[in-house]
Length: 268
Image 1 (tube, helix red, strand yellow):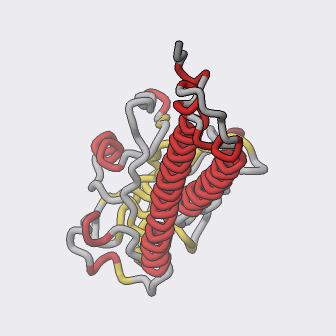
Image 2 (cartoon, rainbow, N blue to C red):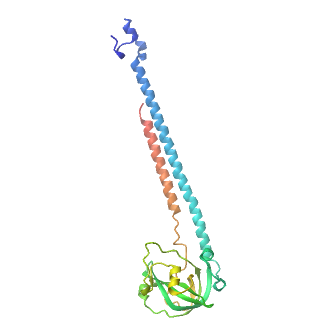
Image 3 (cartoon, helix red, strand yellow):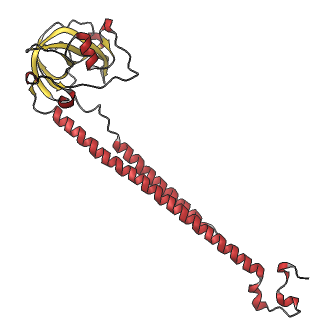
């Protein structure tokens, strides 16, 4: 009786099997088919890993390049702001109604006197500890009442008298955006604020909603250290983001290479 792969067709008829034709045995043919199927599976695995690897690298590199472009864009903005801050100052008296849309960071000269009214913004300086920024009410020679950010005082100087004094100021127009939902409300009884809010401050002391941040002032500084406008508070993290994306691309490339090597090492 024939039992599958036990005998060749020639053995059934009684003929003597030819050893030279043993390779044609059906079991060996099945083994060859299995090998071909496994080879096809490994090739498919290899190609899939290669496509996913190259695709992932391309995406990560494109994100890194996008951050490089964003870095150049942000550096251009910062350079423009720095140039505006350092520009030749214009006479404040010649600006009828300064506006944040057109006059932000504009350098100005103005003269007049402080009125003795002031608001204190909780602040701090490296090496000096906690203190306050003094936002003084300033009356210009043409009679306008504005806010003047005169600079920093240490906490110990909070209660020292700062009576009205004449001042000639060079500074920059500024409308800082420092408040958010986590900013505590001001304490009017102590004239204490936790962030500069030009509109709200102006309303509280009845001035125009205009703030000039002192760069230099001629007159009695009353122990106040100017803190001029600069660009240090403008976030520019694009270089770090670019390095992160490029690093991830390198890691992805290494993982892809390792996976492809592992697939190639598998035996058929």
